[in-house]
Amino acid sequence: MAPKRTSKSAAPAMTQAAIRNRTKDCKVKFSTGTLTEDALSWKMEDEFYNLVVKGNDLKTYARRFQELATLCPNMVPNNEKLMEVFIGGSPQSIEGTVTASKPQTLEASINIA
Image (cartoon, rainbow, N blue to C red; front, side):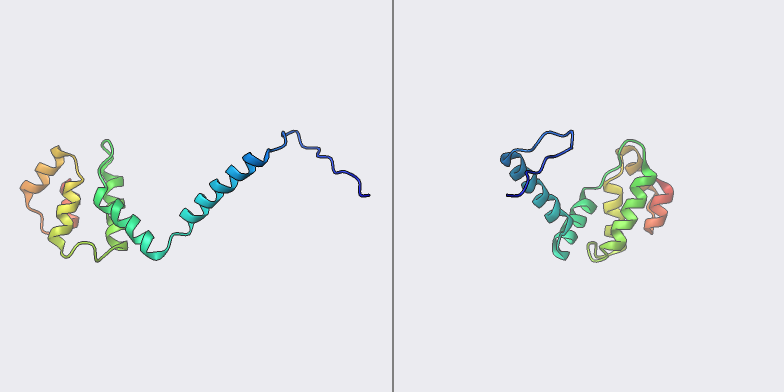
């Protein structure tokens, strides 16, 4: 008969229920970490259309907007629509200023903002 194993760990032993719950948590983490191409595109599109300025951090907003616009080039059909989406995520105080200036490019919109 083999000797019983004894743990030298200070952590308490886990119950079967706790182990099962951990397994469920791991499945969720694994599945979210391995999104398929379609799911990843959907996630980026969702972030792109719901992106807004947090506080007064326009610089971070503009950088992330440009990243998403580069990663998802087919989401907006033209430069005008791209600027419309950018301005829509800006605070109202900035939105009015940028719209009144009638910029021709996204870069011009970012510089005005």
